[in-house]
Length: 164
Image (cartoon, rainbow, N blue to C red; front, side, top):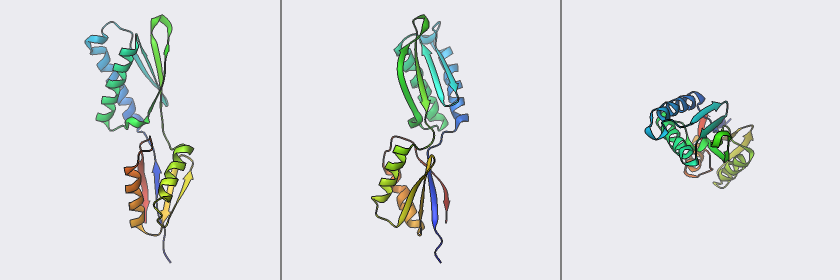
């Protein structure tokens, strides 16, 4: 009797590393010359970042520093979903950035369609915020992983729980 192999496709963010990146960014902004005496603030609240600055240029500079810190800490950049820049009190601007964790229904359907286009003997099913791929051959699963790594779904993908 053939035993099925499986793995899960997930999109996870290490929130401790994200918190560290935000703290390093805040520290660097306080020390930078172009931010001296300005109202610039960055707050991480669960799955959302709230940026406040005097103008859009400084908001963009803060985001650039954050992205650099995220890369150094191994946090995927695709998890950031910036919102609109809005005017705030005191002549400042603010922006809310959501941190996307998990695979949504739309992305899940895209991943399942990408697995089916390979025409291998594997099944893909959406389970909450992840996609489980099962098949009889481990080589087929590795081909699916390679195929998904080469495609861009707009989110960072990780492959976990490879079981044979």
